[in-house]
Image (tube, rainbow, N blue to C red; front, side, top):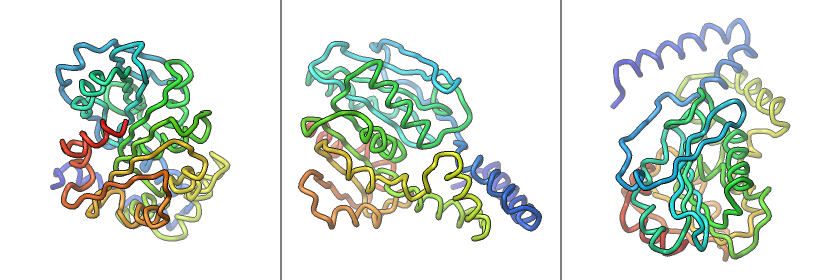
Length: 281
């Protein structure tokens, strides 16, 4: 259920977009892209006790300070945990000790504008660049797990990281198609099609890629790692229909676990899913 403040903010932006779009579609698109890239909440969950045993890490990228955590330095393999939009790594505490028990070195970082890192905005390019920096400075990392937006960022990063079939990638309810996320945003904010053209053009002018390029399904064509994909049929944030298109391709390198009733966020908290992920890694 939305808080009163959230309802007021949504009403404000809908009205602003409606009025501004009659004056300048381009300016409306610029403001819409800023809003699309701005997390509306900064979750700083209380750390599970396992975080008391971590080595605190930090680095600066793109002018923002990224806060991270490392366990079991020098482990037999290295795994990086990537959280989703409007989330943070402290929600993944139940994965850490089991991975340590397997001999893994575990790395987890809050993306810019999330958790205890600085910043106000995030996009797929920024998140990808952060992952590439971590791999270069803390790696090589051979195992990855990401939820939602983190799954998209990992897929984009692995296109640029030299790797082979021995690598592991876990995608938990990944943001499969950026176009779908933008479609939802435009529908929710009641923005019109003319603004969408300017919005897409703005993304292209900034990144030299259309929104459709920021796609897990496209990126995985260049990923050699073995993949475990966990998704719930009732996911309302990253719809199952996008993931199902990939499942129906029967790619032998991708193993799917499809659930019912866990939704978008409970899926990575579920003990059965967590065990399957840890076993796969």
